Length: 163
Image (cartoon, rainbow, N blue to C red; front, top):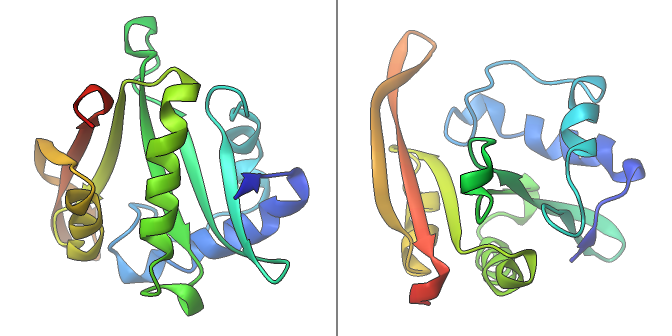
């Protein structure tokens, strides 16, 4: 794992866009552009809210981001994490490896809580989070509509003081 550079942004967007059609990993319904993600990319601070990439044989195969939760100072010790993996490398244990890395890194980022926002029908991501001790802290029923269907969003949380 290493900190992402601007040269990584096209590949980060490519991996993200590859998940849209499944309707399991993001509420975006159409591919996003590189340009539309520049501000998001720049909002990541390597010292506090890094955007990290995973490489194999010099090829970027996944990424992990830490993002502020709710943007208020009282929540500064909580971050949302997101993990996206190239479709050719899914199901190979990379999600576990990347989540373990995130949990181990979190204290050095001054984090006490990690959150994962997951669609209720995304059982693979729910299983991943649950295996690392995340628990469902919230449920937003029928909050998303994609292709005429309603979907619930689960909020999974991990208190790092409990790990």
